[in-house]
Length: 138
Length: 138
DNA sequence: ATTGCTGCAAACCTTTTGCAAGAAT
DNA sequence: ATTCTTGCAAAAGGTTTGCAGCAAT
Image (tube, rainbow over all chains, first blue to last red; front, side):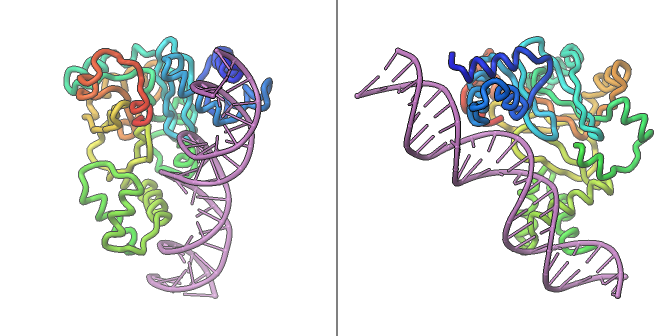
């Protein structure tokens, strides 16, 4: 295993959250400044092929990566952009239905559910009209 | 209403599926060649503010747009990239749980569920190792 | 010698923005 | 006159790729 791969693996192991390629690059570069973003993308790709890493699309912005582990889903607030992880078991029922009705095998790792987080629901109450901030955030 | 807006609205009304900004641009340009992509993005933004249009992120590639109507979810195959719409009612149970447990208000319009479609499940059977095509498609 | 990894720079795709011109009020 | 909308071109964000060099075999 090369220095780049070791460094990227270390970063992924050291964090509890999902990281974008850019965040991973920055952290790797804090100890190995010469490692380039393209290498990070290439290594991440390779790790995915090996099943070590999975990624998810959170809707806005960059793809995020994390070590394969306890599968979890993501909820993303379309107003403030915050994302958080939710237990994979929330998807059990839907998984069964999708499989039965459409033959579609849901991937819990990969899911991003959009909506309004508790804080933003409070702020804007019932379905206020979209504002620029909300669109931007998302 | 300006020509650009009318044209874009017509395109959206004439299709039954989700369209990317690029597809919308191409279709609009078939009758009004001078309309630019930036205008399409701006008009789409405005339509969203008005609540006429909603968009969804399908994971890979570009954002897609459609007229606000019967809300539906999307499932996207991570292998072949195909996306299809699924009834919003599939999200009922999950919506309730997310609200109760996390105060999170799911937006059914906006959801993209990843997984393997029936065809691709057949092709690769049980959990074949990821291949380049799959990564690419997604 | 051959193969594989890497850094760099450039390319790419999607989306946004600054600006000056034109249309509508 | 003022305001809104547009086209164009450039920029921006995220990601991929060509290439030459270096490392490991």
